[in-house]
Image 1 (cartoon, helix red, strand yellow):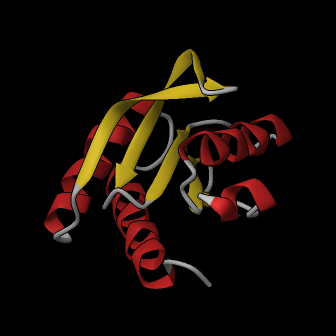
Image 2 (cartoon, helix red, strand yellow; image 1 turned 135 degrees about the vertical axis):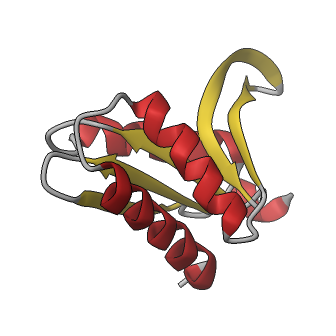
Length: 129
């Protein structure tokens, strides 16, 4: 699996945050706590990173990634009862737009940290670049 060691470190940091903070906070609080844990783990993380989306080589808009770790893994943070299909689709779209290979949805839910890992499927057009 791609970036297994890195994603394991990230997930470990998420568990550290949840163990210390518990549930019930806004995503922005978990984001700030997670940034501290990632830094403590020696990982470079960028929060609220603007990413341009292109269609036919034209910029058609931007989205904001919650956190990008080591320039390789997109993190989408949630603080909801459970991860919805729409959250997964959102992350897959982010992976497609950035051409990054791996993303994690980290849900700081009511009873535990819920993790969903998504991997971008390479298309023929991607392989030509």
